[in-house]
Image: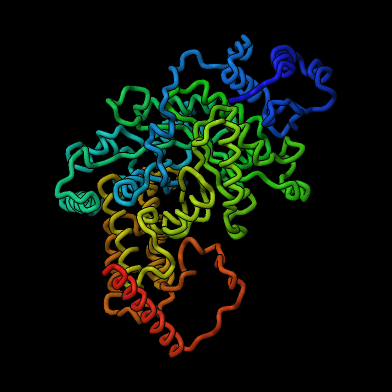
Length: 587
């Protein structure tokens, strides 16, 4: 409940509406010199906001919120910003309509493909998935049909369910030549066997003997777009909804596309050049919020508008000149300012990556869960909704990290990207670094690779940005490199063969898996633990990262073979003792 004084009412009803309709010169006279805009504080007082936050739309939205909460009649100028065609909001929130997803698959270029999403959703506890980023400008281009066909892989639930069950023709989904090329060498029986293995895995997870359409759950899908032009973003979003069948009724099913996400987190240099991602948000927040506001005002009310962001840069980074000469801001936003501006735009869900754009690749550091907690608290206080959905992203390596992250950040859910690419079953386990034997670890990774190849056999991935000729298999190839990273590193001949363009079919990839497995078949647990693949730092996730423990900077001691054997024996003995204790405690 917001309390407001008579003096504040006078300011709200008289001064602010006049300011919104005034020219820039008049605003300067009314509020004093400078470029400051207005900002709402927790006491509903109005203070100057630096130009680092978009205000002309955000201010109108926040004023409408104040009027709705206090019962003040809306000003005609302010009320005109609402979408008059949007249906009335239901009592159930956007997040609740999606069944409050806690485990989220991140948007990843050429890696958030449909077969990978389906595998993670059906078998490994992913509650909601994002597609790979789609560049809005390329999607709406007049001659962009090839781009549209090669990137958007969202279809109606009944179609996807039917294809997995073998009851629907999958040919309408084979729209790119590289998909057909990836299937070369596979017989109809091979494809049917892949389907049967998928259905058996789903049945085992569900604890049932048979799988029907009602058993297969196609989870909510969010399509991420990138762009800086509000009109282009809206046009792309509407085309995505239309092409995916998300504008029509879905017979009670969740819409194929449940939300449109704006990419405000990409830290790659290509994002600077294209004016999207974290560069757009850091350097041109006013443009960012104009895009989000227009998306929310133009899209159907039942379709969510979400934003995936990074932490704002620090003042020290700005003072050091790291923002570059393209920045339009005088100082970086604070976390509170960033969250308030997003909410003022009507964003339905925010995902926060707990790093700034400067923490990337070899410069990556630990995710700042404390800062994410601040984002969560700020969003919920400012929105007046103590359940406002904020998803935490970053710092998830093992299954037990998920609970720790939720406890530390108080976020609604957790999003994973790189770790999920290596461990698709991340959300279905509570594993720590030492919770698996070397043999179990090997079987787990080979199992992930084999199951992904089965899903890709039934529905080959679209090529995305990885080439028209071999793009579909290049997506598959990239997944295999990540899932099998630790084992390919100690088998350089197989690693080179997987990277060879002459290996370009699923059949060849399955043969490579057979070869890889054969190299470990005759090794016992002790021998496997002497392999470099058993080292925790050999994972894909840690390729750019150091140990998170205090001893991360200590040089590793040089051990003889006998010493390594003895160490392996001690670790095996310790693991046996722990298992014994666990079994005794359950008696």
